[in-house]
Image (cartoon, rainbow, N blue to C red; front, side):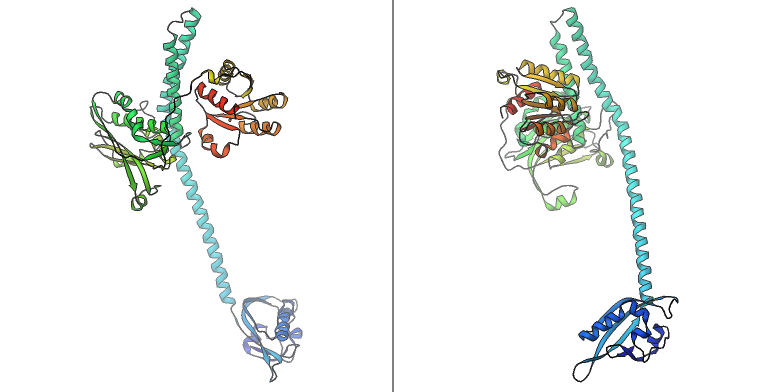
Length: 519
């Protein structure tokens, strides 16, 4: 404690605690400026002047006072809690300041040590977390490599068979044409086409398990769709297996890609057939389902609400709990190498999740398996099926519009140019992005740009944007084999742009082109 008198803050009284703080310097009868120059340098005199002038007390907590008892001597950092309390006379005028405080240096040192300890602990936690993240990433990478190893047995086997069907058929066609024997070409052309379509389907399955396949969600009535597959499914399972459909009355409409739903059902039926090598019973049921909050909370990634449920059950060998836990993983299969790719169930799961739905497996060893596919209810009417477009006179143009085709695959580019020529268009070719851009710069007229998105040099979107900078309003049709681009179609495409996903039928391409050109 200390008592300061007058505006010059002259020491009138100090106690032993204050004397110890200031290094036992002689302060009585002297002003603060005379006795404590170190305090003056650190702003304490300004604080005293302010309290004396305003009459308002000043309170500090943990304030640093670097005590230097003699000029040039050692500095002792002390931390103080203190108050400057103005003292008034009978008339209320400020005549002095009472100083009272406590040395809390030990407390501040402890707080600083704790802060350092906490900072060190936080850093150690961050380091440990990073180590765990890196370990998990290494584990995921190892699992990916293991999956790739499993993939080579199934996918490579299937693709090699498909490629053999394509190349073998085309070799025979080429040889027969050279011999002038053109009477039976349809059979071999059909074989090559069938193999190519199967290869395309396999590619879509690969994209499906990664949830990147191009979905075309539409309002769908599941009962007619399931019923339309009955003949195909009966032929698929054979005569040893009893087949029954139980289609629920009043089934709601759902919103999904009908082609992917058909593919999912076919995969489930094939799995069920393989699980019943000696025969059994296969049942497909449909019903309306409500997943409540309690059920959704007990499952992962499930939202409560109304769903259309499609259930495929068999009386086959069943699955163990361990197999069920892995069944939706890509490339996981219980079939021998070369007989299964492990993509069927993962494709189904990917399709369900992309459709904002859910898939669940119930099974017991020796008792059979049930797979339930939940697809969200759609509050609207299902669309009427439209016949597939075909190359007709409606696709032919009399105006001779000029179409720039930018595609790096020679075979694909040649096929598109050939079809455009047959339909009356003037097709101009470019094998990469920079070449396409040069055509856009130099040609006088271009009515439509047809470009692959994945191009060397410049990608298709860059070519289109540069083309529109030179030719505002240029119509563009993007082609892509990378399905994630199709998923971006809503935000990726601007007015006057459209997209078609490979592989596509030529009549579908012709329809798209005609639609875009007609505006």
